[in-house]
Amino acid sequence: MNRPSLATRLALAALLALVCADARAVRRTEDPIALVPADAATVGVVHWNALKQTPLGERVFANLDHLSGDDDAARFFRETGLTPREDIDTITVAMIRSDAGKRESGTGLVLFEGRFDLTRIAAALTSRGAKLDPSASAPLYRLPEHGGDGGAVALVNRNLLVCGGEDAVRAALARRDNGGEGGLGSGQGLGKQLSRIDRDASAWALVDLSRLPRHDVESSQGEGEPSRAVIGAMKSVSLIAVQTTVRDDSLDFQATGVASSPEDRDNLEDALRGVLAMWRMAVQDKSPELVPVIRKFKVESDGDGVSIRGNLPGTFLRSLESHRAQK
Image (cartoon, rainbow, N blue to C red; front, top):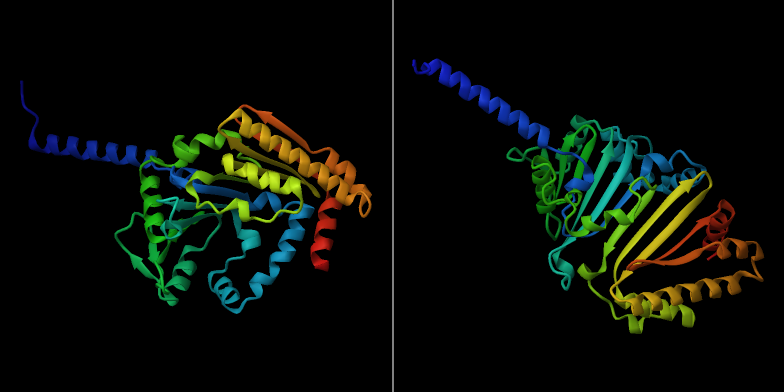
């Protein structure tokens, strides 16, 4: 049998290299949840594009408009051509802690999905002292340090930016190249709890309390015995899952606390019912129209979690805004 010629072997090797490169490209992921590390202490998502299409979202954006009036922020937006209200669709925020007992061990990661002019953003970053690292798998700009660890911004593509501590951003890029290995999407760590929330909700968050510093809840001041009971019950809660969905001028809300024992779950459920009762009594004279709203809130125990859920109508939300404005 004739042995393949040198040219044939080289051609086969080149073809194999192309196949492997294609396999790596197919494996790559840019799902923000897959880029968040599984050992994150918290993760939260805001579907900015869903909010801005509702009357409630319009009020929220109106309250945030003053941010663009800041001189440096306004200058950055002008230089990059970025209009947050129009150009950002989703924001994913995560807090990473290597040691739950040390505050300084934490770092943050923020991922923006939307439409971005990468050339103008790169120029704006460079003009502010950021340095491009050519060794990264995506354009990564190291930000100048100001009395602490330096941050970084990765311009992954025109639809995705990754910002945060430099180590956290580099690790996110590595997970991107490895198909999300070690990320929340792989079902590890905090990712095991993703089934507790509706990922299509307007906003949601998971908080692993076991990975965050614990404050002395005994010294916390609550408004009345039910509030103190909730604070006390929270000592046994290891995880909190929160989600809200905006519906026109109102929003559906749900919060779940996960406790390890039936007794702890019973205590949390009783404490939450007590807070609702106290809340009803507090508003029945000054704002009796809110009593039916509060009565519709439900407290339920399901498996290892206790949930409180309800709908906050626009009238209720506006009353809260008015009350806050009067303070």
